[in-house]
Amino acid sequence: MSQSIAHPALIEAPVLDVFAERWSTRIFDATAVIDEDALRSVLEAARWAPSASNTQPWHFIVGRRGTDTHAKLFDGLLDFNQAWAGTASVLIAFVTETERDGRALPWSEYDLGQSAAFLTVQAHAEGLATHQMGGIDRAKLRAAFDLPATYEPVSIMAVGTLGDPQLASEQLREREAAPRVRNSLEGILIAND
Ligand SMILES: Cc1cc2nc3c(=O)[nH]c(=O)nc-3n(C[C@H](O)[C@H](O)[C@H](O)COP(=O)(O)O)c2cc1C
Image (cartoon, rainbow, N blue to C red):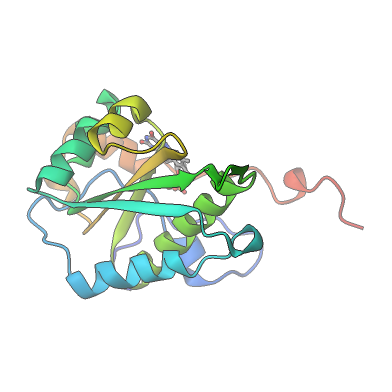
């Protein structure tokens, strides 16, 4: 893993390095071009996520910086995400099928989230940074990509190379320096007999 570790997690039990090292940066290298093999691998990891009855409801819209697809994805971000996410090499929209052949897919967003998690883990292994965003304009994205009513855009992920904090705004640097925090392990266990 070549990324510098800005925020190692304060772990309460041993975990794989990726879980302690990964974090959601807002400072990407605006000059970095995505490695196509790495991009294919992160999408492949997402494809191998488990899903309810193996329905695989996920679909992805991949836009490399500088392309029309990227411009449409960027336009589908809310302002507070547009403020930083455009520097990532790639934006990926996570779209889920909520219904198939007239039948609801009740776990489709759960499954989509798993594909996103798998993607972030592979990305970290490829030396790529990621940041997921729910702050999107779903209606705008739906229209921009002519999505059918049974397809729901849920999030966009920025994927790229970590940038130099010295080149970022003071506001971004401050946010980047904030510690990663989590509720305690004991606190999230409803029962643990
Ligand atoms: C579904 C989802 C939606 C999120 N939406 C946004 C967002 O719109 N903007 C943003 O800056 N971060 C967003 N985040 C990032 C979270 O704030 C971040 O993952 C959380 O604070 C934990 O930080 P870490 O990923 O660095 O551990 C989102 C994360 C997820 C999983």
